[in-house]
Image 1 (cartoon, helix red, strand yellow):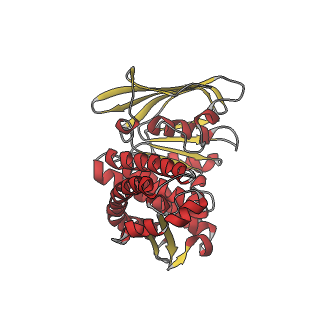
Image 2: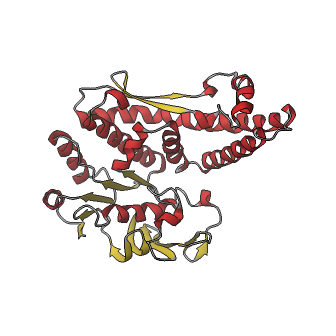
Image 3: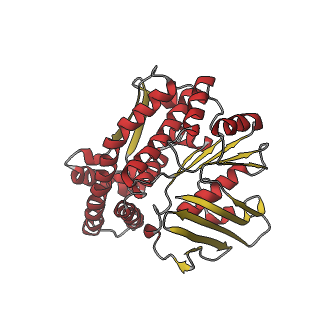
Length: 355
């Protein structure tokens, strides 16, 4: 599966852009600020119906315009499929596949698997636990619509419970109803995350070792109240605090992933190069996981991937890109010569776009 064509109208800095892509490597080169990352984000948007970078859809509409549109043609052994997404200010987003409206996003997510490696991934290390939960749930949801449904339903329950906690006349019986749903959905989410990590972490460790040369031991551990069989009691014990602060302080929405190098938090002890290697390994392991589970190679977006890596690690990643490991790849870089070197090694079957 690969993205054959892309058409952009009023998306971020682009008024209009059209391109046909190679099923192998597509390189975007040019100075900072020319829109390389925005093209990658348009590809991401077509696969996930949302931006990787913008927190709200309306932020993707070009300044001074009232609407945006993205159109893509995905191709595989069964033929071509057209996807169209549009948004007008003040209106609901429209998603169509082969001219038919997509009503449930759960039916769409995973149809066009994709993995992105971006400088923005550093927030997975630097920021709070919500981004790490979003990462793991995003990966699992690409292969399990049931997990996605559970995550969406759980978020809605938390929203309703938080509103109830702020109600002066709230009773314990009312909260009990939401606690029951939180526990039921939370355990499903926990089991999905735990099952994924049991298969994912060994792949991640090997990928990190391959990129780094084996000098450091990287690891990921998962913490959750559902590790404890008394999750209901933990939730009940937190109720007084929840009522005092007006929101739910414990549950699956507070789970976290701990990223370590040689047993120490990578956030505090990892160099910039080590952190970038950690994140790159995380995303490449995600690629291998999805491929092994679905038998399909996701589209791979590599945004400014070579920055802050030493020459040995750059050479290893370039050797991966030039091999047969991946399917369709989009890679952006500000250094045209490095792109040309990559393309010379690749031979035929690549496209270069200079912005």
